[in-house]
Image (tube, rainbow, N blue to C red; front, side, top):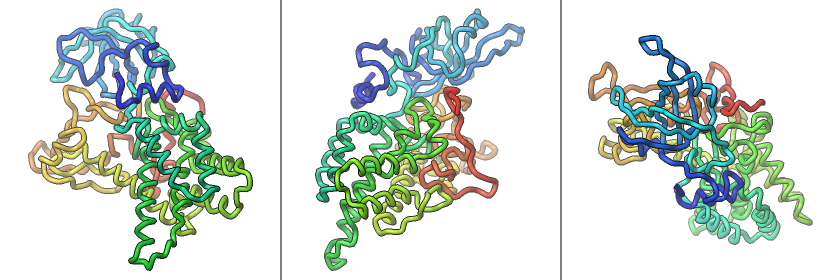
Length: 433
């Protein structure tokens, strides 16, 4: 199932087989219907052996794809099934959709493991609503608008690096806080470039006497490069886990290294321009406690930081709005508050509808990040009474507390809480750190 060109985009980026050469994904969680026989590939997010009241062993599973999570059970030959696959494996299962306590479940009768390399990334990862081709065309237009010959040569050199561009197309911008989806990095970058362009025009119009205080070309180039290290920091696989160098170095250092190498490859690139450009990358997160090696000390760096922060916060608000109930979101840890999105009608029309679980499935959209999460329940009022509101301390999309927060990797998160720094995210696929 191709979404807005992401099947071809993911394949071009080197993830998954060429479309048509791989077996079909099959059923999605969101399409499960009670009483039907289904077959599909899912990620095993939880696997445990339990016992019925009569003492018979059975296998309890949580099966995931990009559209949601559903409980699965193996009632017969559970020990034999348990030996076939492990938690975090991808499995093709055949079974029947049952209902238990108003929740859909999948009764598994056959299964076989699959390799991630043979699957389509977009079937298991949330993706931008914009197509890769559309975003790349906009990016090319932005690059063509840069007049400075040195910066233009630098940007064109990056565009000519097919491996790097494929990674940019596929990469998320974060693991959970904002733009945590395939293409999220490019989507965030383009929005930031548009904001930078608009602000530059604002501060060079008749109201400021026509003074062009901001270097537009430098600012747009900094917007393109600021999060480039994300292509080496994050893995475009379920959960978007960190790479080893992402854990040890972080995207700011990695992005600075990529940017400076590209600048050094442009013959005669001016040292002063190189320094100012490097400062944009190193200071874009703004504050030392947010993991920024340097604080902004040029006008372009100051503007870039605040616009970058603005776009991430708007995205956080939009995501939180999808969880709203009665016009209010849950407590959004990233912003340190609950958010008002309007009346019940507005909340129902927002992303994800009225929020909450439906038939035991997580609604289509960005996935919970950790393998041991339960699908979220519908919002509950205190004591079950209507009209109240509970500020539950949860992150957007139900991400575990402190994930991506204030450790130098979460973009513009709240400063570290008194209880200490955030913990490193888990390694979803058991890769060594």
